[in-house]
Structures are given as C-alpha cells and as structure tokens.
Length: 339
Image 1 (cartoon, rainbow, N blue to C red):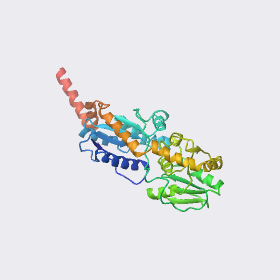
Image 2 (cartoon, rainbow, N blue to C red):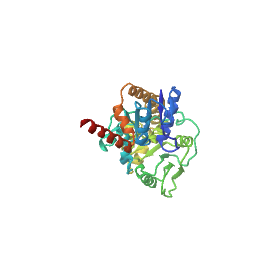
Image 3 (cartoon, helix red, strand yellow):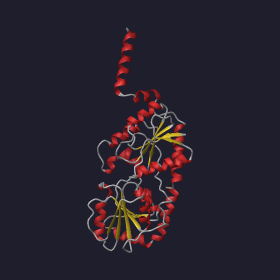
Image 4 (cartoon, one colour):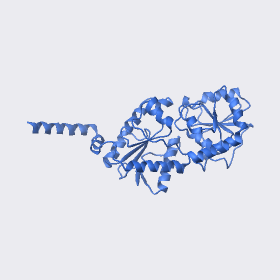
C-alpha cells in the first residue's frame, strides 16, 4: 500500500506529532509513504486544512482513482479562529472519500454547531506516546507540596490562561507549573513558568506534578490531557468540548470557585485516580489501537469507488482557464453538429 502525506513536520502542535507518529506506524506495517504529489499512490492523507484543495486536485490529476482521507480537528470558529480556515477545510471535505473525526464532540461541532464538514465518518480518538509519557522515569524538582501542571502550545484566549492566573492568585498554597506559551503572565510567587519544553522535558515535568488543570474550551481531543493521563495525572477541567468524553472518571469538572474543593477531592484519591488515568489511556488511546483503526478504515475505503465520479474529478483537477477553454470548445462542437 502506498500513501501520500504531503505535510512537512514542524515541532509545534499536536497535529504535526500525530502525522509523524502515523507515518512511522504505517512504515512499520510495510506501507510506502511519499510526500510527492506527482508519485503514484493509493491514498492521499490530509489533516483538516493543511493540504489545500489545489494540491488535492493535483493529486487527482496524477492519480484519478486516489482515495482522499481527511482527518478533522474541529471547526476553526469553535477555537475563536476566523478567516478562511473553515472554508478551506470544507473545500477539501467536498472531495473526501473518508472523513475521520477525533471525537464525538468534533463531529458535532463541525457538522451541527458549525456546519463546516459535508461528509460523515468514523470517530477515532488521538493516540498518545505511552512510552514517553508514563508515571515512571526522571522527575524534576518544583517547590510546594501540591503541584498543579498547566499546558498549552497556543496563546489563544480559548486556552484559558486568564482563569489559571486567577486560580493561582486565590490559592497561594498551591504551586502552578506552567508549560508552553503563556502571554502576559502575572508575577505571582506560586506560578512557575517553564516556557516551551521539548517532549522529553514535558514528560518529566508532568510526572513531577500531582494533577493537570485545564480551562481550555471546545477542544476536539486535547493532546495535553492525553499526555497527562498517560503520565498518571488526574485532570481538573472546564466542562467544555470533548473533555468529559476523553477524561471519563479520571478527573473532576472545575470552575474558578470550585477549584480548591475539587483539588482536595482529587488529592484524597490521587493514588487510585492515577492508576485509572494510566489504564484509561492504555485501553482507549494506545498508538497501536488508534493506528490499527486508521489502517482498517483506510483499507475499507479502498474497497469502494471514489465519492465523486472519476471523470468529474479529473474535470475539477484542471485549472479554471483550461476548463473554460474546454467548455468553449465543446459548446462550439455542439453548435457545429447541430446545424
């Protein structure tokens, strides 16, 4: 089997690490992987809007019967991101043969809450590196007897940084270890800002804390939560997006006002919850389980004809001026033979 994944890796955001991990798994299973659109292949894989419609159409020109697989992250509007991102991923989805959603909430948010995605498809949750993120291994030293980890790779206001700052102000006896990008961080003694960390350093930091706190809104399948669960951390979370769906009974819902009482409940049961968190990840989010499911649905898609007739696909793949000239020529021929 040969698959084209024309996405260059960047060490930022969960989507790029997903593509890298998927590529490695497929290669281990004997799949041939290319980034070149002009190669011959059976499947082209895209992540939300990362591969533009124009590139998908080029792929069709080289491989008219190629199966188009689109993994959906969520609606850009749902993250407070505007512009043409949702328009671009809708354009690609109109051509897709297989649409994969990261969670039930992801499917709801992109097909009902914000009608962006045209096609329905299976839900396959994100994987997490259970070897790197685990409860055992090197740890770091942070002050405080109760250490709360917070993680974000984005300064998007929907990530809830301001809520974390307010909780830290109200609870000076708790240490807050902030990993990633946090803008305008106030000078509060119990906030320990770590900045953007390598994945290895993040794993050390997570297992050095007792719980993860997240006020992130409208997440489709939050990677920082999966990494914390894999590290044995119970989760305190804002009830939004796919949080409850992903976390299950391995954490508690929280607001600014209820933080301290919910934290105490977590700490009273932390050993039990820590084991449950790790077990949940191994059962539902293990890479082998997730990626084998990807292989199953892609191989199944290959058994069926493309969503759009091949002739119409090829017509779409040509540029608008070429299509216009072809249409004019066909119109001229019709007139000539009708007289």
